[in-house]
Image 1 (cartoon, rainbow, N blue to C red):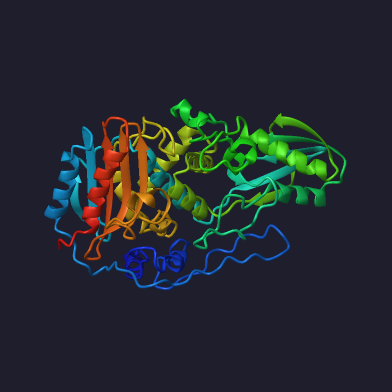
Image 2: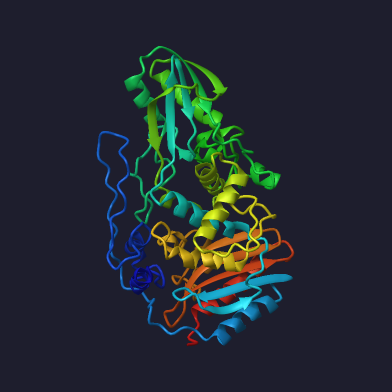
Length: 473
């Protein structure tokens, strides 16, 4: 496995600036690139009679990361870490860990084994555990089952259904990656139902019994729901539960009952097809019901890429709940936390002091150490299901939550990382390439600052840029 990692870092697309990035990143963000040769992205199951092709990634330019590059001096890296803790812009508790990605050698530790509030870097653990346990090609299945004249829409974990027909992989982002939102649609279910169920009077229900909740985690602040920073997770939703199923931007009002909204959407579709529909709301499917329609989501790797890039709380929490469902039979926060810990521990990740109340990191009761975050990245390289993890993280200066933040900075093009922020908490965990071409894994967790992110973020940025500029072999 280490040989595979070295092959990746030799042809990495962690490049400076945006020149040539579109072609390079197409090769960098689909499963299979942690080899010396590019592989095609997975072909999605067809939702229509017409074949859909996902473009093969191009190889991209040779990058600047080398397995033979000199390892930075631990003294120099330790000095950078201690400087971050001493910075007037950081808080009373600033914990840092930096390791050599290829060997695991600790290069700097400032209370690196001490857990504290991780904010959205929690999403990194959810991503690793879900990918490892479920596999990168896992798909959420939404089904409709029939018992007599009653049809039941069965929630399967897909929160990114489209009200109409899904694109089935035909819609890609600017970098050639599958867009998970809208991959499958309610009209796809409607078409299948029309082909198998005679038109006439039907009763329509939605079954969310695999997702007992609470749909909105008790440890999440109420303002997050009212302001649209997070929504309810019931196992099924249209467009991540955004109000009325329409695009309201990254944030905006959320459906009070996303499962009922999905049910009503299907009812409208079937009504247009001539069915006389009586909607009865949430109800468990009757024993002996037979499947008459089903659609699948985009593959898990695409969903993970989306929530790591844009830090989507709702989707991440749903993925964590599905992990709990698959491992322990019910999609509850407790099962999600238990499953995440178990999977990480099985991978050899240090879980000392790990406490999880959610999978997204919106709870200020979570406790994660820099060691756990760094271990999750380093250990991921050793397993087939997770060895593409780094490619799912957004690229500094160009993508997602680290796009504008590192634009034009020394770390731009050399950093892949997950951000985190809550009131008084600023975190960042990822990998960065030094000026000598050595790949380092790091985690910084800052706590105890007054409200406001610009100052602590700037301090962390200075630290990461210092690592990127480190010619300190």
